[in-house]
Image (cartoon, rainbow, N blue to C red; front, side, top):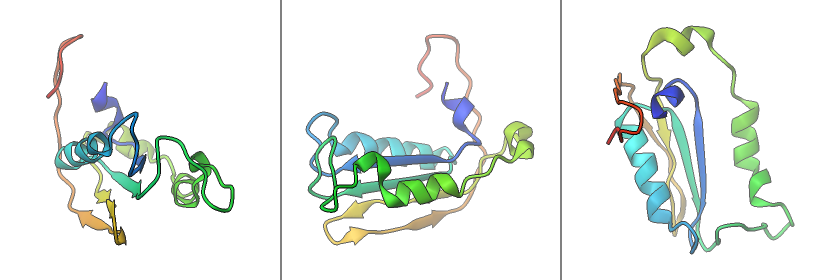
Length: 119
């Protein structure tokens, strides 16, 4: 199923103190996708649990960076069938704040049989 997301932008938002899904899983998933050439943004918010509200009452699902990301997305029909991976953006946040790294694009080919893991 992962190949279906090859030409879709992905946003991963994770609380740094998540005890339901430890942040290492989001970090590893973002790194794995980056290595495969997927376009993604990863934001980890230090000190936050699995679900949170900001001090101003804004829920994590309404995160301003996430909403900006979603509003800026446009479907590119040519990419939907091109088979080439778009550029990747990984933004891990650490104790000192969010950092962004722009990575070059690469092509990824995933093949699997139903029920078979691709990695």
